[in-house]
Length: 290
Ligand code: G4P
Image 1 (cartoon, rainbow, N blue to C red):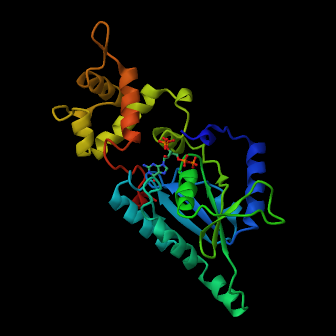
Image 2 (cartoon, rainbow, N blue to C red):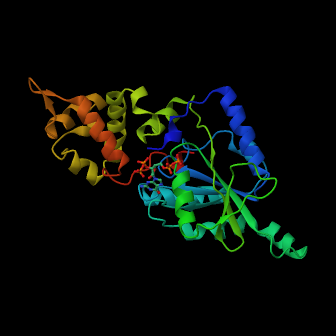
Image 3 (cartoon, rainbow, N blue to C red):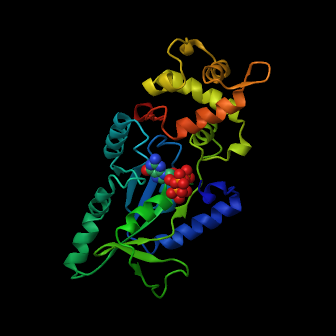
């Protein structure tokens, strides 16, 4: 699990982060905003538009290997309708990453044409990555860098510690992502991030969280959910979350002395299996509800 996700955000910290990102923004032509395809609303920073300003942006719907493919396709359409270029990617396998450079060139088309007109033929395109913790920023950078890990040496004027590497001829990426805060004061956002494991499990009640998740999952009712949690003969649609958690514990043989259901163990199991997409490819937030 990423270290970065354990950062606690305070107002001072947010201001500092914002300034740091804005100073890096001066060095780039475009921004790659990474979000989680399963929760495209909750995994976005609420202030991004203001932070990024007029800098062209490409949205990467990452972890699409774990999201519902139909829902992802609809999200792409949603972004398109809102004049935002978005592409589905899977940074674990690298799927979809070949669309990244063309997408950046698309949002920069006018600028690239202007450079050409001015005779700036060797002008490199520079991009930085931003996103809230756990969306896959490091995975993206590592993946895309692997293809060409030739680092560009430090340039004068570039903030110390920042490194650039060449992704393709004339295309450079800043190797440090901008880590943004989520809209954590929103209860639904907090819960969805917790489902995904983006909030430390130590600070949430896992039984309560798993009970809530089971209620969501029983609505989606994927074949994997029914099969893996052994619910084929259970009237799970009419059960409360905690009741369902007890049933799952029993069905999976998780009992404590006296034959009581081990709901704590079952809760960890449900969360683990969901986070590993073993209960199906599930998108919790749909573009239709926007
Ligand atoms: P961050 O920099 O934005 O904080 O995210 P990071 O790259 O650390 O990714 C967070 C977790 O998400 C990692 O799992 C990573 O492997 C996983 N991940 C990133 N992109 C994808 C993707 O497209 N598909 C899938 N299935 N997983 C992805 P982890 O459990 O924290 O670590 P590990 O399992 O890689 O060791």
